[in-house]
Image (cartoon, rainbow, N blue to C red; front, side, top):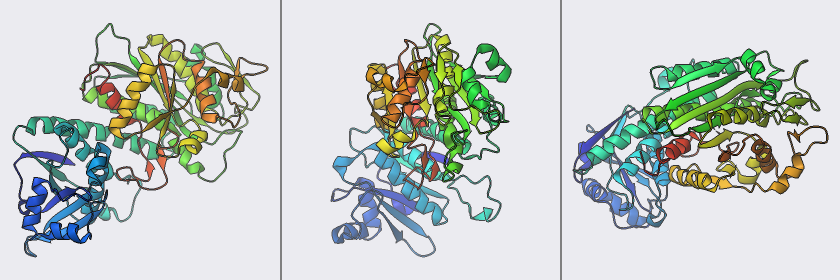
Length: 502
């Protein structure tokens, strides 16, 4: 979808075929454009608000026709909720709802004006929120549809009207938002692709394809190279599958030579059956999404490259399947990891932490400024926090605070769980250095406690995205299925990494 920035003051909605007008709940003070729209509709907006037929509740929508039948002009009222509750995520949600309605009405474009935000919201932030909500809310995954293709419609253009002196900031913000949305959409595409196509080799190929023409290098380690290195935890998980594992390494140098890189590690389980500790059949099809962390890392780095961010980045994605077979990893097996630590495997369905263990150890080679891993790691996190929130644990307060701020800005919420040393007791092994599962109590925390043993002394944060990575129903600008969670959070973190917004 193309975004146009147009200069204008209090635009007349009648000069646009479809105009979106945001309205606050219970607030008689309309924006200048809303007042103009009220006049052009013969006072209908005021009447609807007075009669409470339209209250302005968040994402409430009302369509008004203006002009004659031939002109087909429309005003779409969209509720922002109460003014005191304003935040950018409400803007994203409202414009997603409006875009979905407009698309379903067989329209291909719409216009809107950004004179509704509070003084605390910059024109750049408002523009990004409107563009993100519109594009991400319009996302559809259709590559495997073979019938009724003509019914699959996409918006072609959005025009954003801003005041004189705001056009440059709005254009820059719109361009940035489009880059971020492309990254999220690519992540959603990768996650939604079925496991018979999205194999570890295919995932590596997607990373190589995405890097083509960009200032980022991609290196892929095959099974033999991993064996030589001693990545036996990753290879142990991969042993049950006919699909060979891959270890994907991405490097981007946008910062100073002397700066240590930020290493992003993403779990890349392209399909997780649970292995010998087999999962229940119900919803096993959704386990193609167990590589959501890896997709987020790959796509966030591509966005960082396109935004030319002044940071040094390394992305590490251990990619494999977890399958049962005659040569698969078994409960009770012992693995010697890349770190040299031995791991007792008590549950083969606790495999994500095994492949991350080797990746986190490998991350230390870069002497990183910090390490962040993203993984659909534990069902326990979904039980604890639901599917709205990412669980966060880590060793560095400053790093966690940066992540919190990025999460608050993007609406990709995080909630910190404790990581006290008492939890280490649950993962002690009688016959190895550590075991890969600590039982049902505090399952999310003990998984992070396991990972911590492979990080070393570097600042580290772990993001368990098991809840928000895959949704069972649509939610404003996030469709049912793959959400692409983590991409926008990481990009915001990278844009603010050096203390200023890039």
